[in-house]
Amino acid sequence: MISWLRNVVSAVSTTASALAASLRWWLRTYAPQRGTFTEQYEYPELPLRVASRYRGFHRYDLTSCIACERCARDCPAECIYISKYRPPGQKTFQVTSFVIDYSKCMFCGICTESCPMDCIFMGAAYNLSCYSREGCVVDFARLPPEIAWGRASLNPTAVALSKLLTGPAHPDPRSASAEPAGPPPSAAG
Ligand code: SF4
Ligand code: SF4
Image 1 (cartoon, rainbow, N blue to C red):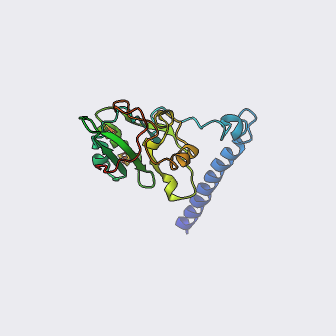
Image 2 (cartoon, rainbow, N blue to C red):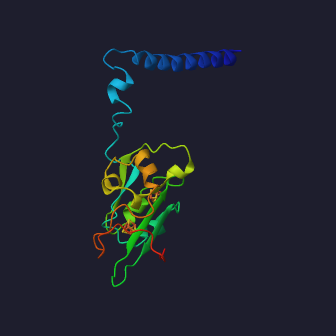
Image 3 (tube, rainbow, N blue to C red):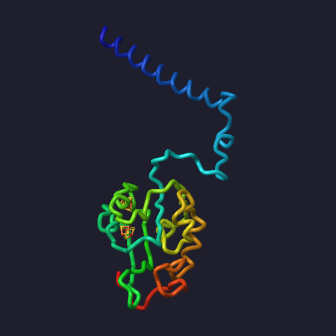
């Protein structure tokens, strides 16, 4: 009997303390100095503040990538796909597509550690909301450089527009041709 009573008291006190904690946090939402959520963050006009080492969607610099594919090889989720070709008479490759499938990426950051050129980093962008799985597949070579390389500039609109392009959004500065490259007839992948 004593033991039963002790269990009842314990259950009631545990439940009461949990409810008190919930009540405390609920009342805090009405504190005048706190303001509303939109007063703090102006969402979605301004992005939420993230920690300096936050691992969001990648930043990628096509102009310094040498297409070595180390990032793709070391990715544990195997979600980086690179296409490249070597322009005639040149020793370096030109990247024609650099795709990350965000339906598979787990934001571990290993690809950024593997890169010998420091041209891929984890960015601060966290919003890539879309209506289909296709929207989760981002080809960074189809994005304008300021979007692909910006710390928090990757956004669903730019990704949707990039899917209308058939080649890299800007030419490789090492290429003899100043024209934006389209898909080569025989891309070595
Ligand atoms: S963050 Fe990890 S899972 Fe995502 S692309 Fe890089 S290595 Fe692959
Ligand atoms: S490891 Fe770096 S240089 Fe090599 S393909 Fe990946 S992003 Fe480009």
